[in-house]
Amino acid sequence: MTETNVRSLGATFFKGLAAVLPIVVTLYLIYWLAGLAEAVLGGILDRILPFYFPGLGIIFGVVGIFMVGVMLNAWVVRKLFDWGESIMHRIPLVKIMYGAVQDLMHFFTSSTASRGKQVVMITFYLGDVRTRLVGMITREDFESLPAGIAGPDEVAVYLPMSYQVGGYTVMVPRENLEPVDMSFDQAMRFAVTAGMSASKVFNKKPLSPDN
Image 1 (cartoon, rainbow, N blue to C red):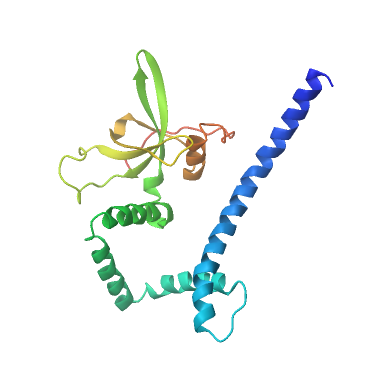
Image 2: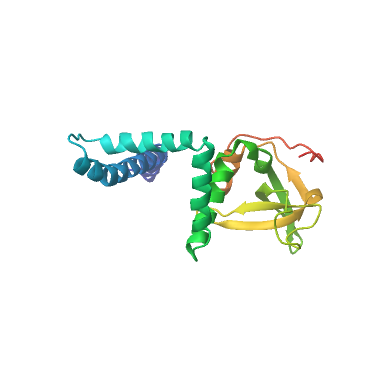
């Protein structure tokens, strides 16, 4: 077998791997979450209910999460939930983790946060080399935070790091940001995969005072 044939076989294999691996990882994550719900809730239901069948824990988990969302529309339930949150925010260490997860979920799920999901470019220099980073505006209002966090014309920009869950939050003057016509999800994939997942060309538009 010639070297060309070996390279061709290797390229074909990795092409197939690139297509299959994301599907396998996603399905495994769903399987793991479903197994966790079944192991925890299924074990409880098996003890308290007169009947049980495999999958009942998953069903109860999905229904339970949906019911929590419905009940939070009630004023009384919302007040009780707020009271429980206030307790969580008073426990050392727990308040840090709980608050961080809560803010992250709100950032990704809130329909009112569309303005905070503006994708931008930040320009800086490495010596004489002009370099740009992809970032997302996460906050524009700092009135509820201590004075000095940001200036009147600054916004908070999250700069994700490639191939890991992490990044930096920097305060940047709005005039130094260059908006990008790119969705939040596309920008996250682009940054986290070191630019290898985005193949679609995106257009740039001028930053308006209302953005």
